[in-house]
Image (cartoon, rainbow, N blue to C red; front, side, top):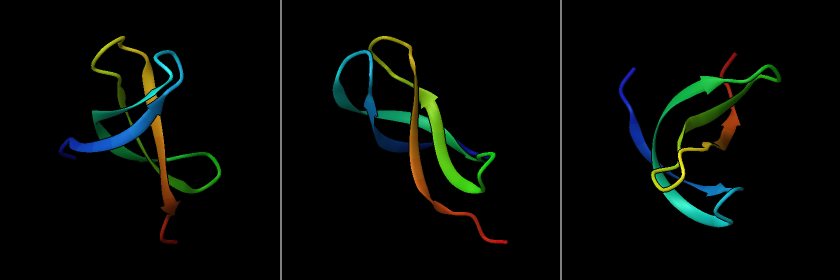
Length: 53
């Protein structure tokens, strides 16, 4: 799966950042983009919505 650019909130930087990430399905069945903050390297998540069953 190719990496796409998403916008998410970095908890460590306390700012919204654009990050490269891949879509994964969480334990609760939600699609989420997961990647690294380009500034500090912390994992950044963005919830995208309910996964298709």
